[in-house]
Length: 458
Image (cartoon, rainbow, N blue to C red; front, side, top):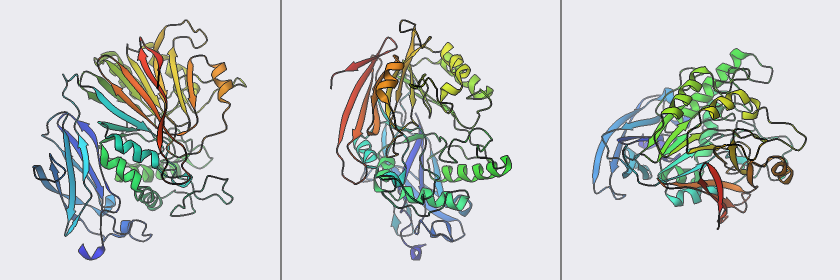
């Protein structure tokens, strides 16, 4: 292995925090973009040593062990560490032969009875060729308790023949669209070589959900949406989900074209995180599929935390465009599914979304057309990290949708702090992504009071 070069070129990550454990990730790749051998690795299993410590200098190591990096999983590692203290910061690293990885910081979820405040950030839509991931560097500097990534971690597109201005700032590893396992692996490697993305992974544990571009634009259920055969699409989806798993700190492996993404992650008595998959189970006018919807409604009904945070990929509230149309690819295309979720909305419901490449903040209402109807919760929609936004007549959309309180067109992420008493969301934005070094600022701050948005002073 020593002759193969430095193997930790894609960084380290952690994720899926529990009160007593976490998943540690890395992938061995001395030549990340090798077109013949994944990561430039030999076709054999490699033993990797890992360490977990209470301090960054590793003077107080609490656990250590070895794990097998297997070629069939692109030499990725998903080490499940257990027996840890709740709500505790740890540091980890990997080594093989004489090579030592960068150090990562992680943190376990709080104990079930904890009332300690929770600081989390969420982000989505990080198209590599559209710009620099500077927003993720600023997110890393916050050292949150956990990061939620709400989809479009990669984009499967190839290079357009005539790129529009600002839409091909950085070159991809290939001009071709990803359709095979080898292509998806190289695309993830291209992204993971970015130092700002590496910093964000090394700064905090992640909870990640895919949206559409991890597979193909606007896919839904088992249908590709582009006229190709369902069997060919499911083969492509299997490849995409395998590469997704190989490059993120997930607990669950895919089985063929299926990957269980919906899950519950409690954070003490402050937050119940409920992560929902809004792509894989779509059918007809059903957004979630029966099994997932029953799971979600059961979780909403049984949630005891102060804040019930539904994290998912797409716009949840109604968003009527000036011409009167609605988006068929968001929850507006599945109004019955949304109505069933809102019919079971508990006190303290907060929905998180992404996908649309702009910042929005919305009140959730029983009747969208009646400003006096019962408040059922709020929604915070985060902008993209880099992905260019569509043309948006924001003024007209706000006028047509009085429950939508806010729009902002910058790139960035959202930083949230929740306690037993309040919930606060800061929209953090950067001024540019077409070159490195952008500073970060706060575009708006909202709190939640009696299931309604309240704008706070900056």
